[in-house]
Image 1 (cartoon, helix red, strand yellow):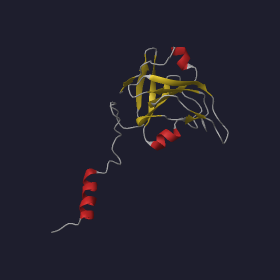
Image 2 (cartoon, helix red, strand yellow):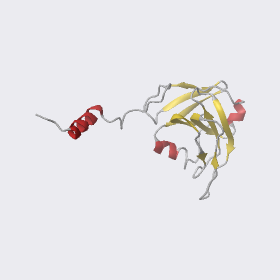
Image 3 (cartoon, one colour):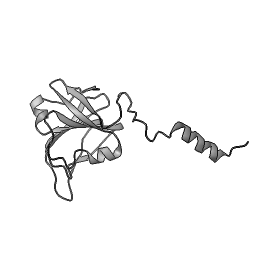
Image 4 (cartoon, rainbow, N blue to C red):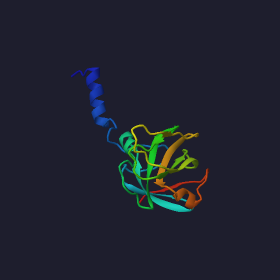
Length: 157
């Protein structure tokens, strides 16, 4: 029996599963499937975070949330370092937005970022490349004494 090249390619894609439903692989970071709650800690404070790994999760972020418990946040995970802009469109609560490089060190922070209820919202543009972005309630970064260079530990619950 002879199989055509397109048929062989289709068969091999079916066998390997194409990776469409596989958990994301982030270089240097061991994480389970997205949407679970995980702990992240700076020297002076810890947070239980939701993970935003898939593009749709990152696009939605914390939009439409009326409150965020004090010790909670969202960790955005990108596949590689880059300049990732954020905005507050449809975000109802003020946030501290913290960018971290591939080594999980703080490289940029936009503190006390106000919600935006307008159609056109300004973007927050970091001046450094990052692979992770942490959103927490506004004011917490200052209360922790967070500064550029601080390290974020990831823990799996």
